[in-house]
Structures are given as structure tokens and as C-alpha cells.
Amino acid sequence: MSQRIKNVDEEMLINLQVNVSLKSFYNHNGFYQGQIKHAKEEFKDEIMKHLTNKLSDIYRMEQFLYSVDFVNYEVDSNGL
Image (cartoon, rainbow, N blue to C red; front, side, top):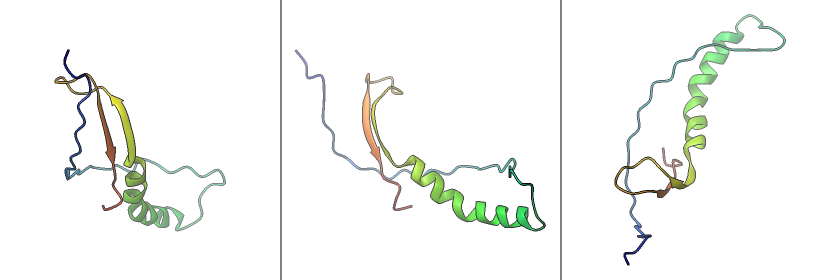
């Protein structure tokens, strides 16, 4: 019988470039003058950290390859 799990301990660097489209802002109390400009600047400063934190995780039993049934992997984007 063949081995059902093959452990592979290999790191690889993957450069990921994405386009982010800012669509709208919502604020329960409305907007004061200059708030949208400030929010756009804050968005530019914070979006990479926000997406990096969402990307960093341990992924188990993912099914997106055709060559094997499942893959387990970890993404550490703290170095970005």
C-alpha cells in the first residue's frame, strides 16, 4: 500500500501583487470636511498591513490542486 501522507518541509517565496480598488466609505454620523481625504490617506497607509494580517494563517486540507487530493500549508506574511 502506498503512503497516503507525504511530509514536505519546504519554504518558497511567492511575490503577490494585487490591485485594490477603493469603492466607498460609510460613516453612521455622516462626514465632516476633509474626512474623506484623510480616510483615503489612512486607507493607503493601512491596507497592506490589513491584507497581510488576513493572509497569514495555517491552511489545512485545502483542495485546489489537481495532482493531489489535499494540501496543508502556512502563510507567514509578517516579512512583507
